[in-house]
Each structure stands twice: as structure tokens, then as C-alpha cells.
Length: 623
Image (cartoon, rainbow, N blue to C red; front, side, top):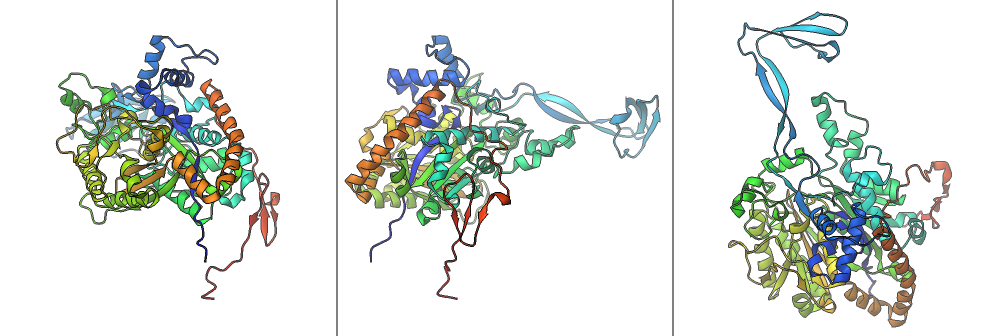
């Protein structure tokens, strides 16, 4: 009996926005390795960023030295720009009058009186608008204070790029603004329009899997819901709904893609991106889905989140950063120092999305082949002493991913044609535990010198999309042959395991033909571990040709030319500053009466193919 073919999830689109810039067509990646690029690519990268950041107008690519420096300074990890780090709003608790028989008096507006008067208050009207309050004993008040932040470094979107200004954002939290832009960028990078993508498959063969690790925590989301009533403001009707962690995926369905297919808000702390990729991969492999959009957006660079992680002892404080350098000024650019002497991680914002297709559909449609998903593994830590502390689950995921790579590439391919994008947060605990895992597993699999990349040194830690940041750097390296070095460090710490590992401190040029696969490792609070193995476009195409034959593969490559041309045209428009996202608010809204429904199928306007209603019984051996 012939073995049934397992569909291969092909990466046909990639996009988003990160501290390094636009993710599609490897622009963000090229900002990371800009000093190693040929002159033409360097100039194109700077020109694209200039338009994105509002530093140059369309059709004017020439940039003077000062503008180029402004572009470099306004990207990657740097001093926080989202709020004044010297004057962070704070409420300071004070007790006025601590003698029990002393009387306090003050005049306030009548409308400012609390609905329930505190015990011991005596109120008398002075006129129609003001009252005199007399009270005895302690008077507990909150007085606004302005304090300097102890953390002033973060990975932020390029200076001047404002996702809210690109579409009618209607008080959307920043993470959702970034979602609309990032998902639009990824979908357009495929070379297909939204309607063309929806025409390729049945409506229920599309899936959207997303989520944010922490939800939307700014004032338009949960921040407003939790804080407004305590600061004399009123929560809005949007605060709760738009704060939900699955809302990025909901926004893609409702306002960008218009999908009626499967959706799920998948959360795994800092491993969330890979959790979502695994779900998409599983659905394509099972044959249930043929097109899957996977991605995350997170916007945690706000004072409350930073203070929360700081009090946990997880972030790099300025004082510790200065101590590392024996300096009186923090080096914000080098705040994240993976696998070296370090003091904590650096928060960041990002929105990264990929589009997957099964291999048959990619061949039929002539889709771009950016790579493929070899496998993704997720494992918990078991019993733990500390919920944020690392455990053994990551040993399992890394070993499984390497075994999967060996199965696809062979022993030699695993040992000589792969490398690892480490989680690499920049904390003292991570440098010890993750390096030990990678070293021991590399030794077990006979890998003599596994190269380790750690791009949080460039863009910081964006929580849910962090694995997407790593994958975007892999997709870029497969095109340009440059693996980003860990350039924020000058040495490897003594307690870092280095046996069978190689930590390049500078960019490394590679032969593209020899780069067949790469690993993405993610570790999250709570014991959320994930490791993904991704296959290069060259290796993916070799696999497609083997499965379908030379003639069919050649025909698919020919169909690909038109798709690639459309994709490149989008890139050129975006490079010239045309970056308005897809946002279809109120368009094509359907009601039940718009459907054509029978007991065999449902036809949905906007989709060429109908949903089939199957009465196949998966339990026919039991019923």
C-alpha cells in the first residue's frame, strides 16, 4: 500500500514591523547586518527606512550623512522614546495629620466629592459649586509624583513610524495597530491579493493562529480598564474587549483578511510565536487547512510593564548596566548582552507574521518559496521550584528538533548545514541554562561546532513575537548569506557552556547553498518551551522537485514568475513610502441571509469555493 504523503507547510509570505524596520523582503534583517552588506543593499536598506521613518519623501533616495546616522540611531534597541524616562507618572501615598484630635480643613469642588464620604468627614456648602470639608484624624491622599525610570532601554519601532496614523485606528491599542500593519505586510508579500488567496481554497481551509503573551496593556486596552477608575478617569467600552490576548488574530480575521475559517488565540509566554506555528503546521499536515496565517504582536514598552519586570529582577537596570561598563552613563544600545556579562533582558515591541501553504497548493498557485516548516516541538518543564525559572523541557524540544533535522537532512546535513537562533535574552540565568542545553544536545548529536545567533542583542525581547523576530533573521540569512553576530558583546561569560558551540561576535558570511536549515529556540515563563526546525528555500525546492518531478517543478517555477513580480512591485511601493495597511472596517459584512445553505454545502459571498458539509463518521468502527 502506497504511503500517504504528508503535506509540507511552505512559507510563502513574511512580514511585519520590528525595531529593525519592515520585516517583509528582509529589510529588518538587513538593518541588523547593515555594516556587512554590499554598498547597493546598504543604500537600499537606508532609503527604505528613511521613507518608513518620515525622513525622506517619495522619489528622493539620496540621503546625507546626518540623515543616515539619524536612521541608524532611531532603530534597534535604544533609549526609550515612548515616554519621558525622567518623569514617569506615579501616585505617592501620603497621610496628612496623624494626631487623632487635630482637624483638617480644605475646600473642594462639590462635583469632586466621593459618593461615599469617609468616616469623620463633615461637609458644608460654601456656594453652589464648592464645599468646605472638616475631618479629624488621618487624611490619606494620593499625590501625583514624577519619578525617573530605573530602566531606560527598550527595543522600539523605528522613530517616526506611527502605525496609528496609517489607517483609522479608532483608539486601538498599539499592539493592534501593529497587528493591522504587520499582517497586511505579510499578506501582501505573498504576491497575491486578499481576494486571490480566498479564491484558492474553501473558506474553512484557512486558519489564523495568533495571540499576544500579555494582551494589550496600554491605556486603550487593559491599562485603561485597570487604572482609569483609580486615577479619576472612566474605563471605556473598548478597554476590555480590545485588551484580550487573542485580539490580534481577531483583528486579522475581521479587518484584514475577512476570514471565516478556523481561528485560535494561542499563548505560550515568550514561546507564543512557535506555539502558533506548531498549530498551523499541524493543521496543514493533517490536511485540514491549506492556507494559514500565523503571527503575533506585542507592545509592552510602557512604564507599568517595565516596572513589573524590573521588580521581578528580570530587566537590565541602568545602574547595573553602568556597573558592567564602569561608566556614569548607560549604554542603551548595548543593553542586551546575550551569553556575556549581563544583568537582564530588554523589553521590545514587534509584530511578525508568516503565511503558510501546503506544498500542493504552493505548486499549483506558483507561490513564492521562502522556506518551509520542518517541525516544531513544545514541552513543559514538569515540577518547578519557581514558575519563571527554567527547567528540563527545553532539553526535550531542542533534542527533538535536532532529531527531526537529522531525519530530513541526514547526519552530515545536521552537523554542517544548520545553525541555532538562541532565545538569548541577556539574563545571567539564561546564559547559563540555555548554553548548557545547546552544548549538551550538540554533543549528543555529534555536532562539532554549532553556531549560535542571538538577535535580541539587536531588537530586544518582544515576548510573544520573539520567535518571529528570530525566524525573520533566518529568512534573511538564507537570501543574503550573512548570519548576524552578537555584536553587543566583547566576550563570552565564564559560566557559559561553550563545548561544541560557536558564539560569533561579528557577522559571519556563509555559502547560501550550504545553508539547509536552522533552529529557533524559545523559552517562556511558566515552563513554556518550544524549538522549531525550519528548512531553507533551496532545500525546500529540492524536496518539492523530488516529490513532484522535474517537469511539474519547472512549471511551478514558471507560474511563480508572475507572483514574484507582483510581490516585488509591492516591495517597491513600500520602499517608496506607500505603507498604508489593509483595513476593511465595515466592508463585506455578512448576515445569515447572505449565505446559500443546503445540507451538503454553504456558499459564502467573497469565496469562490463552498464549505462542504461532510457526514463522514470518524468512529465508524464504534458505531
